[in-house]
Length: 111
Length: 117
Image (cartoon, rainbow over all chains, first blue to last red; front, side, top):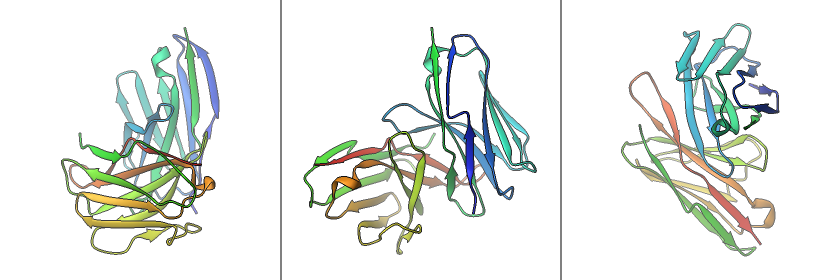
C-alpha cells in the first residue's frame, strides 16, 4: 500500500529565504507526482506535475525534483514571499488514476 | 486549463438531513471523477471513484450507503451524504480526470465545507 509522507509538517520562515519541502513515498512504481498548494478552507491549485520519466519541473520560483528509485521528491521555493503562505501537498499516482496524497507541509512566510 | 465547479461551497444542516454536493466539469468530459474528504489540518483522503454510467468504487472503510454517488453524465457527479451527523462534518473535494495532452490529469473543485449541527 502506497504511503506518502511530507517533511516538515510545518515551517515558518522570514521573507526572502529559499525553501525545500520534502515528499517521500514507499512504492516507487508511480506514474507521476504532483505538487499542490491549498489555501485555508479552499480547494487545490496544481503547481507542478512530474512524469515518472522526468527528473524535474520548473515554474517561476518553483522547482520540483523527482528521484523515483529512492522514493523522494523535493519542492524548492526560491526567494519566498508572504503570499507563498499555504499548505503544500504532494500526491503520487500509481497505475490507476487514483492520487495518494501526502500529509502536507504548512508554510508561513512572514514579512 | 480545465475547470471543475463544485457546489455548494458551504452547507450547514441539521442532524438527520441529507445533503447533495455537485461536481461539474465545465469545459471537458470526464468519465472518471473522484471524491475526497479532508478533516482539519489533515490531508485528503480518497473516498470513492465515480464512474460515468456505472457504480462508484468505494475505498475501504467508506460506507457506500452513507455516501451515495451518482455519475449520470460525462460532466456531472453528485455526492449525497445521507442522514448526516456531526461526525460527517468535513471538507469534501471532488476532482475530474481530463484525458489528453501528456496523460490523465485531475482537476479539482474548490471544495464544500459541510457542517452538521
